[in-house]
Amino acid sequence: MFGLVCSLIVMESDLVKISKDPLNHCDTVDFVKDVSAGAVSVFLGTTKELFEGKKVLRLEYDVYVSMAEKQLHGICSDIRKKWSVCKIALVHRSGLVPVGDISVIVAVSARHRRDALEAVAFGIDTIKSTAAIWKKEVYESEDGVWKENAECFWT
Image 1 (cartoon, rainbow, N blue to C red):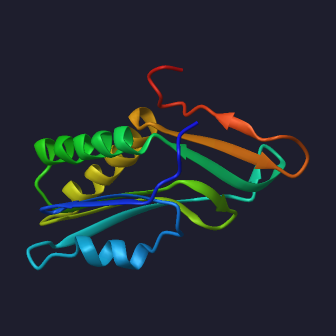
Image 2: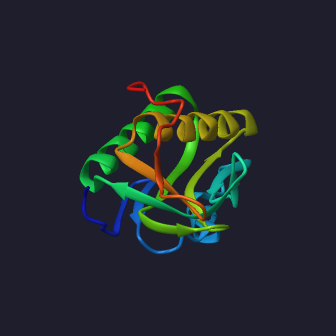
Image 3: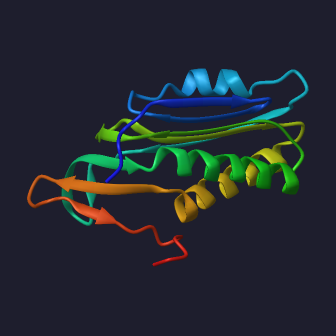
């Protein structure tokens, strides 16, 4: 589909990153920490070993990088309109992601926990429903299957 590229964009208090390399959740949490924040909420999406009884070998993500980056920045903007947050990080893998590895990180700091928790939930749901990121599950027993997210508006 689209080329695999590592991209990192930091704008003010938002981190948007698409990476072919393994993701480091500690670095991401360090980015969103802020002395004015009383809460840091984090979602880590990882590759699980089984799906509907089938052994998963890996996930393969194909990303339209420039479009996905614009969409992730838009999600950051939407979060800031809805909640009072300090910093936001939306980080996603591209390429091959083995079982147990992190494929997506959504991290938000805020003065109060409710804002951070709700913003993280909104962030991951919106990434899954709108971002130009496609996931293929590769199984031990059969060919890989491109997955549709239930959240996608076009499914």
